[in-house]
Amino acid sequence: MYLTKWDPFETLANLEDDMGRIFDRHRSLNQNKSTNLRASWLPVVDIHEDPEGFYFDMEAPGLNKENFDVHVEDGVLSIKGERKSINEDKAKNYHRVEREYGTFARSFSLPETADTEKVNAEYVNGILHIKIGKKEAAKPKKIDVSVK
Image (cartoon, rainbow, N blue to C red; front, top):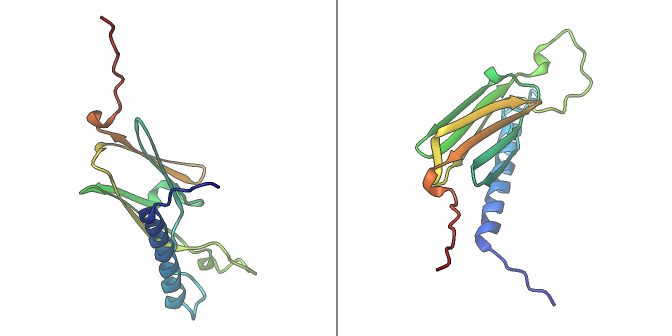
């Protein structure tokens, strides 16, 4: 028999993320029923950390760096942008459009160990990579043990 450690706060955080996406998609679909276009979309983001910093990788293919507005203020990373609709091109006769278009906005609370003076963002192959360094005090330090 195996015991699994259950973290109710992690489960609640995952549920909150899922519900936020569902509500955002429902709202955007209802706003534009007559045109069958979505007013907003949410690009997916992977977040991880290592001893050097925090990393945010946002999947947003088909954009240019000018389409992004990235800010860090009061301990919050905000990413906003827009993907223009291809339906604006009347010369093409589209049979199906499944990609999402419109504006998007994502915000993430940063831990106190994040150094908001050390932020780097680059857009490579459809992924926006953002690195936020850690404060020096937050980095792990190896302590040598001496023998006497």
